Image (tube, one colour):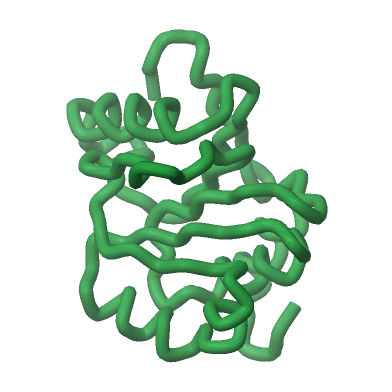
Length: 147
């Protein structure tokens, strides 16, 4: 992992089932630390990192010039419950989130909306991972949208 990457983020990213060529969606990217680490792991793949905070997206873009120039990383300012693929976007293989309020059970209505948006953005066999496991846990999207 890159210098400055916390042990928590490093462990989470290392545990993700990443391989070259995957399309990955990060929900709640903050300043982009995990997104950059994932970009290295997916090689010629692609990561779209989203966050509802304008400041977070600004910081993430500022620290990710190389990955963005290579076309492997993009940032969008949008809340997950409002997220939708842009026309022409391919669906994602994997989505992940760390410390995202909409997915931690504290806001059930927002959580249901977020899960519906995530499921719509993933391939039929796509997978969602969140923190709260050791170091992550998978959310089964086909078992009804329950958190």
